[in-house]
Image 1 (spheres, rainbow over the protein chains, first blue to last red):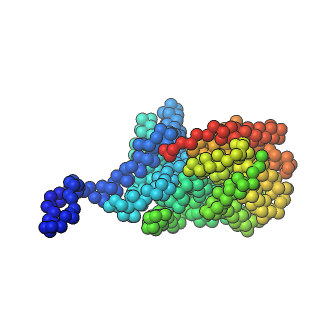
Image 2: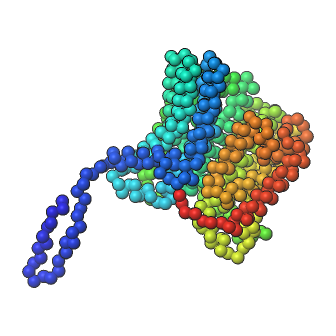
Image 3: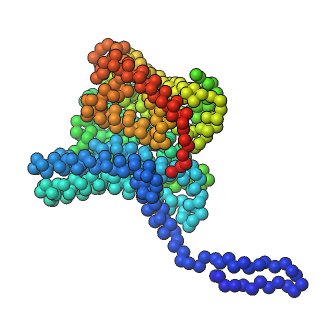
Length: 302
Length: 239
């Protein structure tokens, strides 16, 4: 490409274009997949504050530690008292720590997308070879991976601790696997919800409040209604009410199919048929979140 | 101490565009749930107290307090436009006081009013429950707004810290560690509500005197310190 083209000017005409030696790029073009991978890894690192200022590392790292410490304590207690099983099921752990997970989504989802909107850097991304779908998928995958790291790390602590305490290997491995599937679903669902809400507002603080409001208020409302349904002896409606908040959705899926004991009032999880509805709703929500994000980023300038 | 122009601008920043939507959605949800519960369970004092205490006072008031309190000053500091306000011949404490009044008013309107309506829907103010929780919401609105306004001037991550306080400290630690309840705006306001309702349905872990003293002290100190903080505000760049 960088071949010199001698400029031929007609004789007598003094106007000419000077070739001042600019060269076009002839190195390797890394292409769309590379750009997508970079965006993914940068977003994932950013979700834990790596490659950003010290101040922005504090919160995600703190939440990560808060997430893992109870698991470490439980393991220590189990080893010290020579318990026959862990004090908490693998599947139950994320449900107990939901406030921490919600805070993590709320603080990191807006930092992932809101700043791009606020400083109008989104058009710059799309001047690279990536497309809307690439941007959305990279951000979604990065957020879900970050959440998976956050939720799977304590399970790993529990699992290693359980093996060290010489608990039954097959039993623990099965529980650990079920826990991993459940937190993977949870990560995808929470990442989708968090990013959809955060991508609407360029204001970081407002995005945080909105995500938290959706996650906690829906859980508060659903568990209140469930408690009332339990008190009114209409236990049949409890699983149906559970469809309306992210945490109870995950709870329902894992108590129907992943051998978890339900945290619903009365301990009544959904039946197999209702469990299928739960799985469909979870997958539907993840799909909807993806579609909404693609729709959101179709118009780049906003 | 009160500047109408600052107040008008703050109202517009708080309620403009989509903010009013989320602020309005939460109370609507509370009222909708109350209607559903009333339909399902009928009028029941214990249910009403549980719903108002668990959902309205423990979750809704702090979240609206965080949005209004930090939203009154946080975004301005965040995008640097606060320098235009600070360069006007207004005392910094006046700015803080005005913004506090606005934040308190917004929190009260969007949390205490729906609490009252929800209480009347749930059991028609039986045993003074609706009024008691409304008083609690009013009182805690003032303290929450003052504390979160201070957070907004101190930290760029005010919303997160506010939510950590409201959700982790008050809800999680408060239910596990009894001592944490003594230092919780929610319990202080419940003490006031207990005085109003008088029955056993609204209870608090803190005595009325302690609660009142702490409420006043926290509100005044937070407002004073926020004023001091604004006097020595340094604008930092985006991280």
